[in-house]
Image (tube, rainbow, N blue to C red; front, side, top):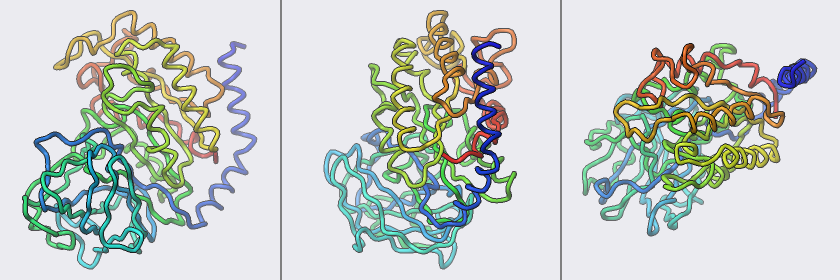
Amino acid sequence: MPKYADRRLARLLRRTSVASAVLLGVATTATAQQWVAAWGSSMQSASPETWTVTDASVRLVARSTIGGTQVRIRLENTFGDEPLTVGAASLGLQSRGAALVQGSDRVLQFDGADTVTIPAGDLVVSDPVSLPILAEQRLAVSLYLTGSNVRSSQHSNGLTTSYVTGAGGGDETRSVDGDAYTRTTTALHWLSAIEVFTASAAGAIVAFGDSITDGSCATVDGYDRWEDVLQTRLIETTGTARLAMVNAGIGGNTVIRVPPVGSIPGVERLDRDVLQLAGVTHVVLFLGTNDLRRDATAEEVIAGITDIVNRLKATGVRVIGVTLIPRNPVPRGLPANLGFGPARNNERHTINEWIRSNDDLDAVLDFDAVLKDPDDADTINSIYDCDGIHPNVLGYAAMGRSIDLAVFDESP
């Protein structure tokens, strides 16, 4: 029997032997209340100089992926050059646009205070508030920024419509009708995590990746990325959200620090974006293509992935590896040097074979096999292709539907 098949058989036998215990374990965990990360957005840069707020409020919309009874949020000043003062903060259920469901708004405090100052490069977690929420319910986090010309720490491709008042708009955090929020933004500013106190969810899956996880070519407010499809399938199989889904993707992200550096690489942001979140039980690790695009070697990428896997496994988190999908030689509407020729594809194939045969991974998602053209393994199947680098919405759906849900049945 080939070595790869032998390893797959061993994994299958391990799954079968623990299946009963696993099901009992998940049921037991899900009945105990615990804090679980229900949503996330990885901060990647300071906002452009053209995006600032002055004595204004922002209302940031985020969809919880699990239900629960209490909520707390995390705010970051990771890319700020000076301390950030939040004069007031609140949380509510989004009704429509910037409007809130009547009676749902809650004042957020930080160590018992209504205001908080976050040092440059730091983050804070709010005190919890009681607010019953459902899986897939949209929350609105409102922040009043007291300063002048304040740039944010942001996640640029939020793919969700949020709202901003005009300069001098003052504190509109408790506004229910939302009429003061006259501008919109699709970036996520300062808000990097929402955690929920839950009795229904056994843990959280973190999708730790680049633009293909972040959702390039997906739809604003559409929730049609591959991990959104996966979450919907998980809910449909049980009728409840037993696992949360956190998107920790950043466009252009790499495993290791390879110039030119566009964002904090995976090996450096792992603690902030994964290990510091509550209740993480599974990580889907989908990085490496941008390292190759910057001419890193397969060996360098494998060493970085190995470091991430080892650190995750040391905490008891289950790690699911993902094969790197094709990049067309000449992308459409993008610089030609972003494509993959024979040399980069050889490195990609080396990484993929290593992922497929890696016994340290708890499972493998073979997205390469899902998306490749049947007649050319180094290009994306045209029906799934957005621009030669990213899948289109149909491609994301195919990725999400290809995942064996049994991967998430086992406890860490």
